[in-house]
Length: 329
Ligand code: GTA
Image (cartoon, rainbow, N blue to C red; front, side):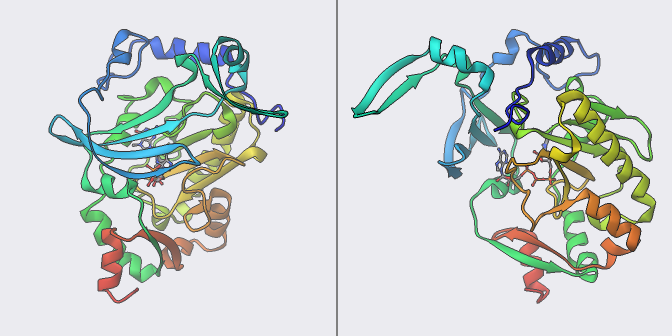
């Protein structure tokens, strides 16, 4: 790996981030981390496991369904990458137990200091049935959606039962994650908030993942886009890339900038991930490069209203059932 690719978030940047994090927020009602003791409160001490929804030994991740008090909860446990800037401490500060030695080969169990051996943990509580299904390992099926299918099958379905957008509004109104914002453009038409994605621990740029959430509230997905949204999309693309270069020293040529179709959350947002990082959902069946979206709209303002779009749906997704009921699968 190149030095640039292996670059950690420098301690100066981390200092700046933690200084910002410690600034009190008058309207912060969401228990944001603030460097105090409550950060370490163990909300999982009463968690009871019902089932493992899915796991991957290769990705070192596990999705667990259970309960916290009377509430359903989903917990995502993920081992984090080894950071290059922690190697010295890892080698000098760990205990090493020999497992086997054979000729020039030996294998050990290394017990790292606790702070170098953390597990990134995401908690969704109370979790809805939709959350539980979303994290469950299931077979997927590719769906072919015409513009008419969108209007007659998909749109009514998402209007009935989409995941709550409260977390999005909390970000836009600075009631949550305000200390994490990387770029804030307050313009009501072309403005957006760029911030680290929930999936990124921000410890190294190797797996950089940010999202840009647009300020306009009535754009559900790719399907709603037309010529009038070009200034918005171009602004997100341009300013988003500039902000990432400035903050993380990562040029546009190292970024994969895309939208999901179908998204999980129907408020327009754009994913910025590092090229080379195999981010969940970056496959061709779901990710649409923002540069292509812009060009398609320039060529045909009705592109996303009329074109057939393909996307995968999980076996027990309600939308898949609607496509089957309509005889479209
Ligand atoms: N900053 O509160 C939030 C927040 N929430 C609730 C979601 N996001 C948030 N970001 C911040 N604060 O990238 C992020 C999500 C996602 C984006 C929404 O907003 O992390 P989307 O609408 O296109 O939905 O994007 P997507 O991509 O399906 O959502 P999500 O939740 O990432 O699910 C992806 C699938 O990837 C899941 O079904 C899961 O099985 C799988 N997956 C694989 N690895 C992981 C992982 N490490 N963490 C979570 N899910 C993973």
